[in-house]
Length: 358
Image (cartoon, rainbow, N blue to C red; front, side, top):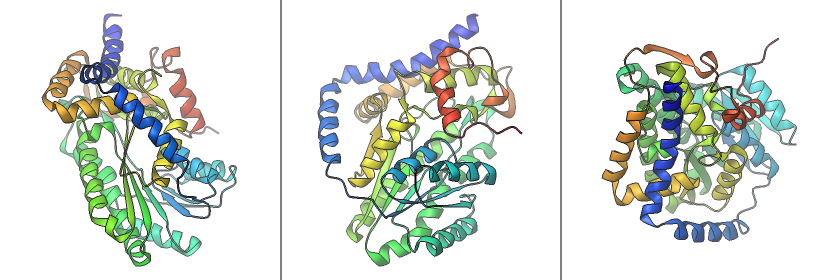
């Protein structure tokens, strides 16, 4: 019971730290004003009907929600992922919204597979108007349980999995003098969160790549959006992998992403991202916690680093843990099956996160 309480406190501390720091900076009123202006501007966004959208990592979670949202705007949809069965289910789900869909099995960490995917999409739809780089993986655990391979894998999928599609799609966009690229990064790419170091390193690299792309490509008529989501209820916790004291690592991670006070629904996130892309927003930070924490970190980075060090003390220690990876669904326990995670479990069912059984 004592350890369970610590896990709950750790997950709450991650959310409270962002809100407390932000409140101390007094930025709430400014953010509220910005939100109102952005909501008004979204009404003037570009019509996306008939445009072709390619979304990587789109067989489940946020990628699938984005595909459905773009489909509602009348877009033609191209999706990709590594698992062909997952991809097939996602395609059927998107087609039910009424979109024309092409699905390509692809590992975005492999340049040759990405180039093949781009060719397939172009042959089917003629062009790619919008590229959304969304593919990613999450490995959770203390630094002392991670190996070099964990950092390499995160960089391959998250960073190179953004670079490869971008460089493959870019020549035709440059030739046409138009196009949109949206890179889904993370709060972890702005503020490094304990027990997510490989993930944060890859996301930091992706933020730098995305911001540089915006600076260099705008003069060519290509708009790049850096999307920075805070915690979202995507159901992805069941497919994240865990090291160390896996049961308890999964506990704090699942609770952090399920609490409606500190996280937003994946449907809301998808709507905001599509609106941001329509309006050529250079940066889109999702969720109050993410906005507050990134604002404060930009002003007093040392303060947020010390706050994260305090949060780390509440998270499970490396001692007694495992160096072997296990997915969330392999280490379910009472806390992660409780009503505390009900919203995330519903999202997992809705957005193809659960394996189908025959």
